[in-house]
Length: 287
Image 1 (tube, rainbow, N blue to C red):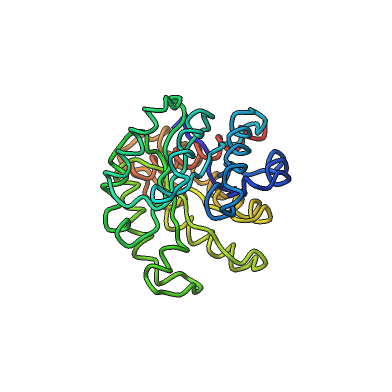
Image 2 (image 1 turned 60 degrees about the vertical axis):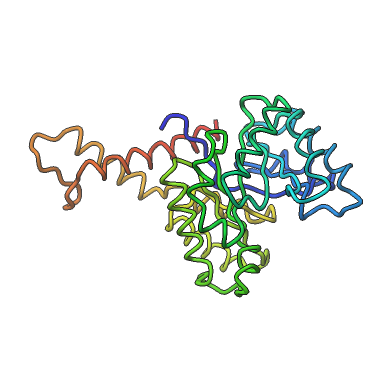
């Protein structure tokens, strides 16, 4: 897993806000989503598009992964957003409300038509009950699609559900999308937490997302970055355990291997290697 890229903290930033784009250069987030959609008023769309594309093309965001979220395919801004984003060549183009495999193939074709650089991938937001039920088809539709992004606010709305601690109303959808991502080898990011003042609730949801298997969390406020980074990174204890498992496995002299009294099998070794690859990739960001 030498090509692992941390995406613990993926922060939405309104591209209509020049100060926000400048501040993003200093934040310790793993990735940025320069937003042209929800965070931008209709009369500011054109200026935001120009600002996001200039930022993505600037090379001034260091090791941070820089993506652009365009407006949806059913809006008047989508075509111009896609053309401009492809020309800017961000790390990825994020598209909201992707509901089916045909939508993915159409987006990939559009990227090809506009000569998007090879390094620019597609991130698909899955936000509706239909998308949850077709998540595997969406994830498998193209190799250019590398990341699924949960749109939990829209999913709650579409379900006529409520935002509650523990997220019981959307757990089925989260699980379906996770299964689809893992079955197709894609990265998957958890949805946002809306109450930026509720640190305890936010950290609890980060922990839930990590335990479920998400690679990281999308964020709406810079104050959430540190908590997401810490929660989605392997703990010192997990790193120590992983190293111990590998040492026991590599030094085995019989068919039965144990570490701290627990049986070690090949699947545990694979998990330990993944833990260490994540740890090493995060450590490399500090160099």
